[in-house]
Image (tube, rainbow, N blue to C red; front, side, top):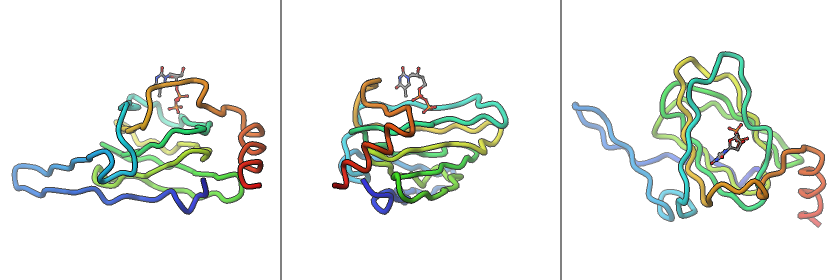
Amino acid sequence: MSLSNCKLIDLPKITDHRGNLTFVEGGSHIPFDIARVYYLYDVPGGAERGGHAHKDLHQLIVAMSGSFDIVLDDGVNKKRFHLNRSYFGLYVGPMIWREMDNFSSGCVCMVLASNRYDESDYYRDYSDFKKAAENNKQ
Ligand code: TYD
C-alpha cells in the first residue's frame, strides 16, 4: 500500500457540557472490521515503539490521552504525523513501516486492528520489508 492511502480520519464527536463522546464503528468510520483492540501506556520518556510493518493488517491509531508522533514509510516515501486528539485516528494499511516516538508523559495510544495478533504477519526487519514492498509494486 502507498503512503497516500494512509490518512487522518476525523471521528464523530458528540460535544456535551458533561463531556464529549467519540465512537468508531468498524466498516463505517474506518475501512475494516475490528477484531482486536490494544493500547500502549506507561511509556517512559524518550522511548520508541513500532519499528515494523504488517503484511495484511489494517489499523486505526488514536492518541486517547497525551500525544506522540508516528513516522509512516511505504518503502519510498516517509511522512511524520503528530497525534494529540482523541477524535482523530490515523488509518494505517498493510505494508507500511511505522516508527513511534515523542510520547508525552501519561500518553495512552489505542490501536484498533483488523485481525487478531499474529507474529507471522509482521516484518520486523527493514530490509525484508523494503524488498517485499518493491516486489509488490512490480
Ligand atoms: P509490538 O507489536 O512489537 O509493539 P509496538 O508496535 O507497540 O512496539 O508488540 C510488542 C510485544 O507484544 C510483542 O512481543 C508481541 C506482543 N503483542 C501481543 O502479544 N499481542 C498484541 O496484540 C500486540 C500488539 C503485541
